[in-house]
Image 1 (cartoon, rainbow, N blue to C red):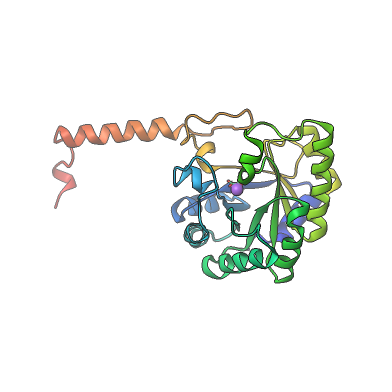
Image 2 (tube, protein in one colour):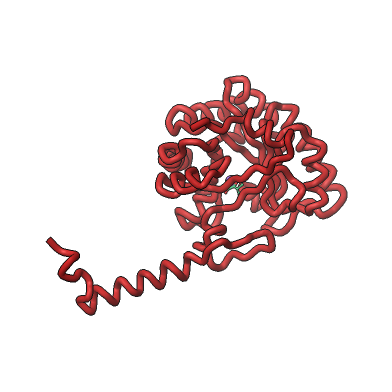
Length: 265
Ligand code: KIV
Ligand code: NA
């Protein structure tokens, strides 16, 4: 199988082919998504929410991200694998950012890292890219700075914030980012950024005009139940399916229906 690379992704944008991306946090799901033909798997720090049960993405550690990423890498044969740099492992300075990125690359086998921010992380992007590590940037709603905003509402609706986002998008491209995630912004702004930038722009709640789409796997599969932003399309309702299956199993054990004659040695 031919591996998806940053070069493949750039060619896809150049040809107008949309890029598909999902999050993954373990081997078993990574293998299914990869076999289905996904282009990119992201070990998102959303693991802090959907895997660890924290309220925000802030608590997850570099070690924990590396464990999840190494599991995803073993399930991913064809797709490009990106690991989020968690909060507190890159904001200090560009040397810290490089050290954390090197640990992810060496210890997990991921192919690239992702970080949140614009101008303020450009020195770090340059330094990581100089070491040969591809960097994906992330603008718009940036969950690691949730306490600065206070809400998870749509970002850059006002002209001034939109212009600032566009300047930041150009800055991260200039610093060497190979791609950019835009989260929860008006579709018109997503369109403008995707048109102005050379590199692929992947949206989550950034409308139909960007170069690709990403969703959190638990949301896409309906494992999360109480999260229904407008941008989310659910392809399954696994929360209720798994709950029903579990109830059936419990019932079968209690009623002594399971195991039956054929299910024992
Ligand atoms: O952590 C995450 O899942 C992400 C995606 C939503 C882009 O950063
Ligand atoms: Na993230």
